[in-house]
Structures are given as structure tokens and as C-alpha cells.
Length: 399
Image (cartoon, rainbow, N blue to C red):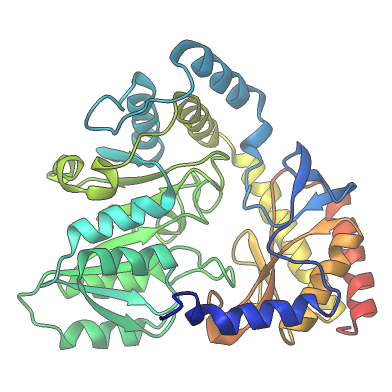
């Protein structure tokens, strides 16, 4: 009899070998309590959080918390239904209105997670006779959306405008085409050349979807993402985003100006067949989104933190994923998985939490320590972070 678990034997062996060295499991950390957007108790020790995607620090905002508490009292703990049945409350519509105001777009559709937003829009828009042209380093939710819709997948080399243009020119002119890009790529923290990519996509008659999960809130003059910063937001057909990063809660969304957009509420399976977000969640999201419209000072401080940490780590001698700070993510490249896990543990023992990222999630088989900064990190915390990295790097033998 076939053991359906046998396909995972190599991974099980790799994990057991890693843990046998005495390294703590880097993928099962428990936070006993969370004190603020930047500090938690981990293993009984006060720990600086540098791996949470809480870019704008909205998780403890007083107005956001109060909105959630009021919604919990007034509407209960959940909707127990999908959006097309009993699952649309006033708060869901209010959240969509906040998104439309934030992006200055005509339509907004809220999903239960950011993953489902990609899964739903991509699989609904592109079917088996259509082509999806995507960056080879695209997020798993993008690839899964392609698979669910059974579209023809055409991948191109990461951030390569010429490669994208060549792929588009080889496709049948009459075929339906959807180009899927990301504003910020979450592993290395690098941004896409959206100005050029949107131009060649439109020239080929393709629709364009941009996932701005890691750029909403702080990139662009008004925090609308890389598409805004590149001046192409009005040329993009769909923007996908999440509430689990800068917004500080959970959920996903798609905004668009397409006149036929509302029909998606009736045909998008991950929207139709999923219970809607709890009232407290959409209340916190709507409040947070409206506050992000006026968060210019927080955006400036986050950029200051990112540039300072990037420069500091580079000066210490660490290999980084980008030549300069391009986003709230800074990826520190490790020699291999063992060294990466040892470094992760050495940081944690000194009171600093980062993400350990490994293949196949990472590009080119790299092992990364992924740092994500927060607008609530103080200048003193950034200084402390650099000191911890230096001490841990010397202990592990990376510096």
C-alpha cells in the first residue's frame, strides 16, 4: 500500500537532521504575549519583532482597537455565512468604501484572506483558453490561482522587462492575456519596474494585475503602492492587497475601475463559497485604512528605518538581497540552511525575531533571514538590532 506521506520523506529527513544539531525549530515559534507592534515575549524573553510585516504598526492603534471592540459588541463574533448569502454586514460595505476612497477607484471587493483574493480573481479572470504571464518569482497564491483556473502559464525571468515583452509577442494576438506582477517581492524585498512592464503589457493587449501586498500603506505618495510611485496606477486593471500587513488585521481585497467588475461577486468561487470576515475584523480594517490615508509621517519614518538598517547591515559585512533599501523588507543572505538556522537562533537568544526563509519559497535556492521593519520601530531599536546582528554574526562565524 502506498504511503501518501512518502513524498515528504526528504523534507522530514532534512528537518530531523537540522534539529539534531541542537537548533530550535525556527518554524514553530510561540509568542506568549505581544506588548506592542515591535515587542513580544518569546520563550520568556522580551524580544524585538523584526519579522511580522506589521509595516505601519496598526495592530495596537487605539482607534483601530476601539472600532473592533464596538463591532464585536454590536454585531457578534462572526457572520456564519458567505458574502452572497447572509455574510455581508454594514461593516463589509464600509470596508469596501474605505478601500475605494484610499485607492480612488470605482470598485472594491473584500475577501477573507489575501491568499483568497489572488486565488479568486486570477482563477476567475483567466480560464483554460487564456494565458497568464507572470514573474517566475511570483507568490504561491498567484501560482495557485493559475492552477485553479487551469489557465496557460507563461513565466518570465524575474523583473526582466525584455523577457516579458518577448513572451507576450509569442502569444496568439486574439487570446485572452493577464499579466500578473507584484509591487514588492516578499523574499528579497525588491520592487518591480512597473512603469515599463505595464507599458509593454498594454501594448500587447493584456490586462494587468498587480499584487501590492507588501507596498500598500507606505510606498507611493499616498501609500497606494509601487503602481502609484511608478505613475501607472490608472493603467492597471486590478490591484490585489491584504489586510494582514500594513492594515494590521486579516483579510484580502481587489480594487478596480473596470465597469464590469461587480459581476465577479457572482462567479468568483473563493468569494462565493467562503464565510465572510467577522464584523470586528472589517471594522478594524476600515478604520486602519482610513488612518493610512493620513500617515505621511509614519511612512517617512519607516523609510528612514529601512535605509538605516540596510546601510548598517551592509557596513557590518552581511550580504543583502538588494543593493539599497527598496521596501520595508531587508533580506540577509545566509551561506546555507544550517548557518541560517544557527544565526536565527543566535538572534532570538539575544532578543531579536526575524524570519528564516528557505527553498523552495526563496529564489535561486537561497536561505534568507528576512527582516521586515515597522514604522513604530524607534531609532534606538534600530541601533539595538544592528548590535544584535553583529554579535550573533560573530558568534556563528558569518562575520
